[in-house]
Length: 130
Image (cartoon, rainbow, N blue to C red; front, top):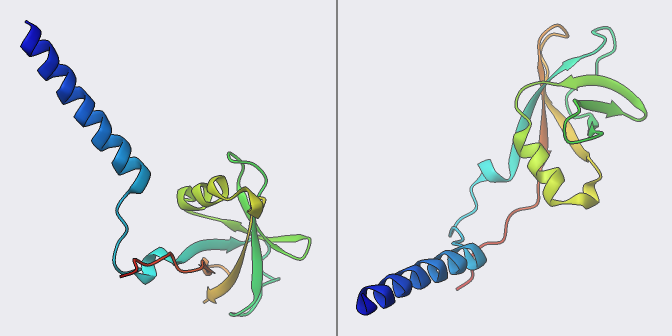
């Protein structure tokens, strides 16, 4: 029983140690793909008679973690955010300095009745150094 007890505790210790090292240091990719630094979000206009051209800067504003996100032009809400916003919520949670706001640019807009797309550019992630 004594040898089994020590072997079991040693195995648990090594497993816990590996887990802590993996959480602390993690593995960083060698390259930073563009998919991780540029996000495109679908949106719809609130009023189809008041639209903006491609290249216009807007701000995504989310009051709280469970509230809907709106696109603001100045102090006016001009569009609503559609689709999954989990990555956006994670970014707001991990960086409280953003204050629930993110500057975006209209990247594609066809007809006012169809969804348009906004693009958020994030600074590139740190690359591995040699």
